[in-house]
Amino acid sequence: MDLDINRDMPRAGFNFDNCKRNATLLKGGFKPPTTTKTGTTIVGIIFKDGVILGADTRATEGPIVSDKNCAKIHYLAKNIYCCGAGTAADTEMTTDLISSQLELHRLATKREVRVVAANVMLKQMLFRYQGHISAALVLGGVDKTGPHIYSIHPHGSSDKLPYATMGSGSLAAMSVFESRWRPDMSEEEGKKLVRDAIASGVFNDLGSGSNIDLCVIRKGSVEYLRNHELANKKGERQLDYRFKQGATPTLHTSVMDLLITERVQAVVPMEVS
Image 1 (cartoon, rainbow, N blue to C red):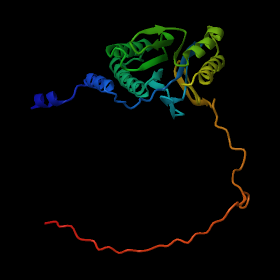
Image 2: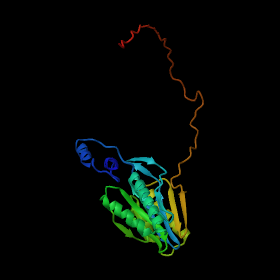
Image 3: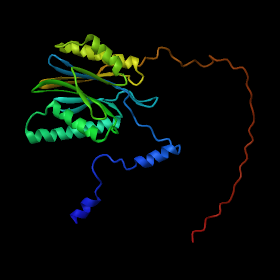
Image 4: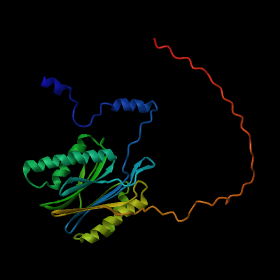
């Protein structure tokens, strides 16, 4: 009986059985619902005592801003965080899945999880799905070997760099890093640099916007600065648009009598038998 139950259980992981059906529908003119994408500017740098991750907070559905305060810095482990760009659901579920696997790995080995282990798990999972999972990631953390920054692409390739940018605003952010980043920066200098890199994406890329989030990871401590800066603060209304009665002149007045008649109509009950 247990064998029959296991046979009926759905397979774990993503299911792409409907890909051919969806392609046929698209050829016939069917317009599918749009996915929520994070547009995004995400960055990470190594500074003297650890790493700093940064992200904007705008999520979009095509030309529509669907969320003005979306959290794009995801928890993986106590010493590892990850920024996500691409489809919001894919980045959220991918980081949640790897976070649980890293916790099981920590319990099995009874050691602090290394950043390279998170990198390998993420890139192997994304490579398995050949880019169909739209998750571009900037991974950062500090372990016994020091601070590390990785950029992971949706197809599963990865780079180990002292600073990394990804998302639609990555070029604007990279221009800031390439001109101002240097080794052994202090924490305040690093936070200012990451803030400026995210702001360059916010103000030069339509897919990025709203606020700036930072995450500072040091040896033994993490500081998640949610809404570190409100880059696009909403303006306050300066004038009162309520007008006094009589401010607008009446040009013409017309009074009409309405003739109302009532008619009573009998209702025949419906036969139920």
